[in-house]
Image 1 (cartoon, rainbow, N blue to C red):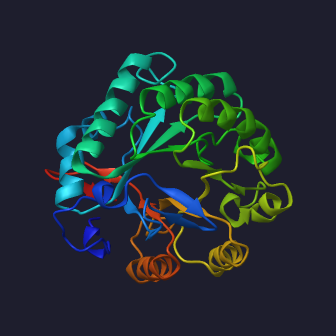
Image 2 (cartoon, helix red, strand yellow; image 1 turned 135 degrees about the horizontal axis):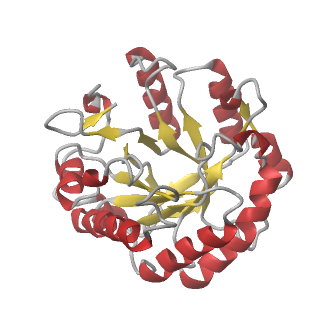
Length: 294
């Protein structure tokens, strides 16, 4: 379903978001630009590269930037599959490179999401260190180091302490090559066998924070995938109260059956606008002659 008309992007300007804001940093729970102005990025996510490689193109990024007025796109590199990173690294990197360079040309930001698991520490380090070396001079690149929903077979065993142990050496290595860029650490959602989406471990992040040596310019990614729930609202309020810098790396306006919930989506957009929380909507699709958001 197309609902790009619900995006409340910046007023049309000849100045691109990247030209206006430059390299971003965190200050408390907020994202700030080079002039220390608060920045809220809003955009869309591309499906994993093995599913819709045709969307990893210069023309699609241009349309999103020019017609949709997004300020950020999210590109997900899949690990498995014939064209996944494990078996076809050059192909995956080529598609990602196209998106990053197109985003820079259009003056928007790009999130790099590597769809791995906690078992693939060496693979994640290989991917992100190579990316940090290649894109260290790009002011528009943001790294998402772990996405919560990338391995449904093992997701129930995930917890914040496991993730923390995975992240500390990974961030340390990335910072050797790219010391300033933003890192979206991961979704701090975990779960039991009854309901994955209503067990966020935000309290664990507060109790066991990342050490100061790796926490600079870190955002904590959250997923919103089942419409408006008071539980979600309470958790977001907690992050705001305690000053945790969060980013909604996957925001969906549909319920579990795939039906678009316009009123609930608008509630969330209003909330994000009021609280200066950046978000990325899922997913872009080629179901028809033009890109749609579904």
